[in-house]
Length: 69
Ligand SMILES: [Zn+2]
Image 1 (spheres, rainbow, N blue to C red):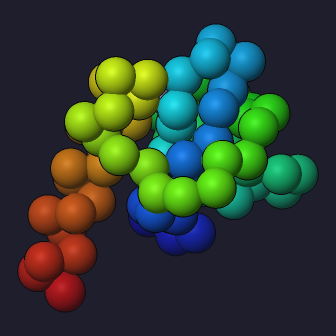
Image 2: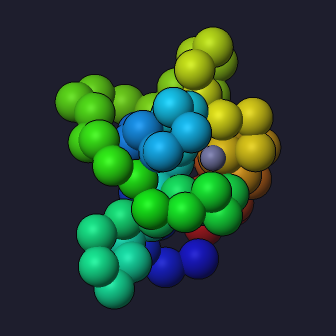
């Protein structure tokens, strides 16, 4: 999937930390939660309590995919 930013965590309107991908305007959560509103300094951590479980699953898929390329 192009333009995925696995190291970046942004907070969406629901308050979760989402893994993000670049959208036409700003960034969107990879799990489909929508636009994100706060850019967090630091990395997206799937184990973070605040992290979106759906994003964490997607993040694992991305990490495994990168191992094979
Ligand atoms: Zn999410």
